[in-house]
Length: 126
Image (tube, rainbow, N blue to C red; front, side, top):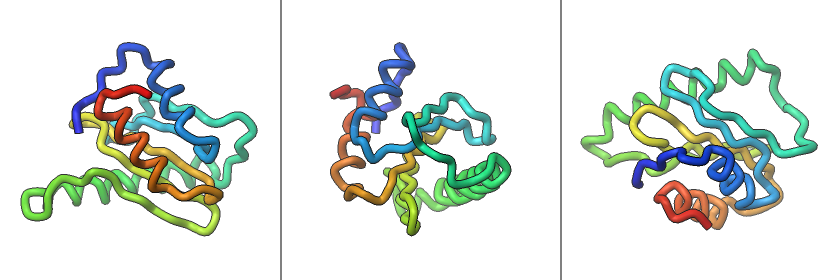
């Protein structure tokens, strides 16, 4: 997947948010856990506290870093999908040093949403 340059950050975040009404959050973090960008869909209620979100992010980054250590054997991760009763989280590599995390509600199937996000990440805004 090509590295996307955030020339117009608003346009980029809007393009991800506009992929589906099922998207709750779009977040970009560096691999140290620092927020680069975060966007929440209007009307979305947080399911986790801020502290719980930080803990979940810490584990997400640890898992991602582990995957990177074995990528020579199994290949690079294109994305990961975590499916819970109340939501889904898709984690995409975003360049070499960041992760794009997209949280979805469970109302829609993720396959089309994931494909459309990958298209945007490859540099083909739609």
